[in-house]
Length: 385
Image 1 (cartoon, rainbow, N blue to C red):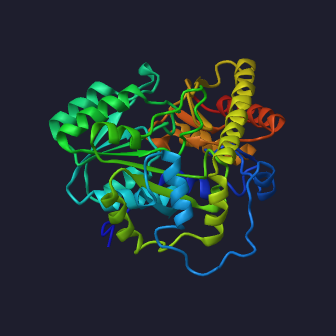
Image 2 (cartoon, rainbow, N blue to C red; image 1 turned 120 degrees about the vertical axis):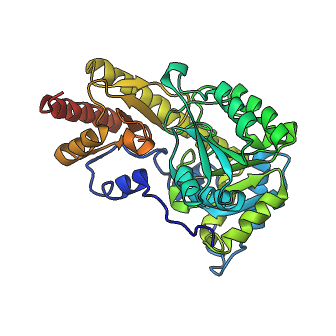
Image 3 (tube, one colour; image 1 turned 180 degrees about the vertical axis):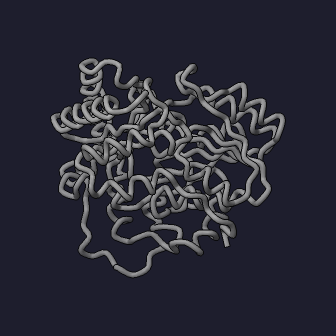
């Protein structure tokens, strides 16, 4: 079995799942507001589900969808792609098919803690490479290169753009790829926020770098965050090396077997370049508007939070300069005001909050950010600092 050991508690997912259905103001999401089938069709997606066979599909994924994903990367064939049930399954398959108990790995931190938890359960020897606000949350490239030379890891796990900081890596990723070639280190990059950069420059894909530097690169991604389609539960693993995908496929036999046929049919139309670009533009517009709204609210309530303005993603990481116990803070504003944000403790970052920027209604966002500030002020006034 892929995981013979006990998985650690998944703080972030449990925090959200126990509260998000009862929250009055939901600011915990990390993707943009979901779209409807009608909205997709208005964007030009040709969706006809009436003739879709509701039997089992292809265990690797619909060939048309795998080709569409391969085309998204460029230079790949459908045999380089495995369709998964969301990017969460893609991460699970990547860890369980690449890492064996006792393997040395390097993990980009802070991070969405799924991969870290999976590596713990896999009994890997984990070296954490911590980003710092002193460097605008960019990767500590000198430290990572030193680790590669010193411990010669089996793999390095990176999220680019990063969650929860929103930092985007380019030159650092190239330097890591160049060094990894010397030690045959596999580079696994969660690219689920690629396409939601706030500037015009797109984050490089590890697939392109892997071909250039003659290494094994693995990209995990999906349609949930940038494209506003979490309900489809469509993700994937892509690699420049077919054997990596085939090994992940052998693990998938133990998990979900095959993707949902209806979801695959929609996903094929979503990945048509003209539709995909419109969805990316929609996501950028939503986040751009919400960042502008949040800047105004922060100015209106000075000293409550200190934002680190992100370079990508549909969320923002903020510091609470007056307390490090952000678990208690987040629980307090949820219980008293129904405001749900994510405590930094779920990223091993006490003293911070991750706040969602994905609501499509600008007026709602202004109300939500204002209520969040009022709730934090109310909590702070009753707390002994």
